[in-house]
Length: 416
Ligand code: LLP
Image (tube, rainbow, N blue to C red):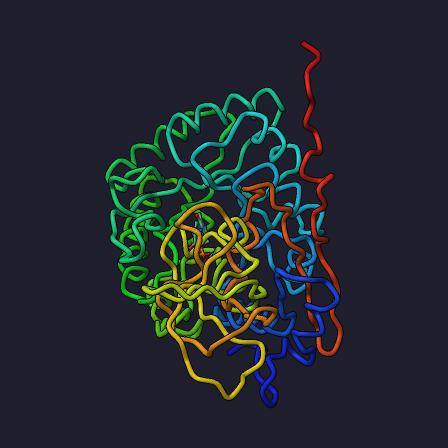
């Protein structure tokens, strides 16, 4: 459930008409609902009940400072994958003691930054990375707290670009050599292995891949204990899916209920890294119809948002519901909803049935709160669009629309 709904024939974000926001900030624009964010975070966080846990929001899903700040105030930590994300999380007031750092390609500079910031732990993805981290920690006079990211060799049945738990993926350390890696890690002076991390993919709509992977990892944790390698944190990653169209993912309660037999009694602190499930359905991208082009083969609605503003349809053929901001008594048409970018792959939807729309009318691209703005770019030299947060009957711009000057910031014409 989210707080985007029709009142009469008009689409609202909480109590604010979307039309009103669009007329003040222009289009395209991302709009987020505070109540939805709060509700999703609270539902997820409280599903763990009295198990010792920390919910680290996956910053890559939505990294706007205002959103990080509001989640932080609700108790969230952060799952980061770069120095830039660390910078954002700290700026938003999230305690470094609630920050976990994943990613296969951490640079030495990023490691240093995270060590100096005293984050909770590094989720290390390879033996080589561990050696480098050991060295960097030595130079900084620190001991790096580490969880090894273990790859359980599980298929998560999602889009191939966002499945990560298979043996052939670039992520993590193979489960079969994990025990060996932990033993070797013990010999590194500046490394303290305190956890195990697993993340098998994204937009997973069934509980079984999660249950299977946690079972495998809990077997490993038992073995580690037998070898006197004590683990305090079990980071179970993110990946819980949402409803874009007709998917029926488990609720946070159902999700936790399925995992709980494995997690209860392990005497571990559980970390989770949800991204999409918190922000996905809390955001919409508002776009305006520029032109209606009727060709013999097809109808095209040419809108002012392109693949640079929302990449998911082009990159994954992802489905996003498109809602007219005003429902009118008109016939439905079948159309491709396309952007202004000079590529045929630039579309929000193909062969979509929706109410006939005319130039100047608004469409809300739903479920755009996760991996929407964060994956946007300046391709075709298009300034990135503003982000707006709605709370009750108020709304505020939380990121301004970029200007042409922003586009060329830092560019230099050399004098040779
Ligand atoms: N933890 C780790 C280590 C991750 O790699 C990810 C996502 C998450 C947590 C959060 O996953 P979530 O709960 O959001 O599923 N751009 C793609 C999704 C890429 C996900 C990458 N990793 C999309 O638009 O569908």
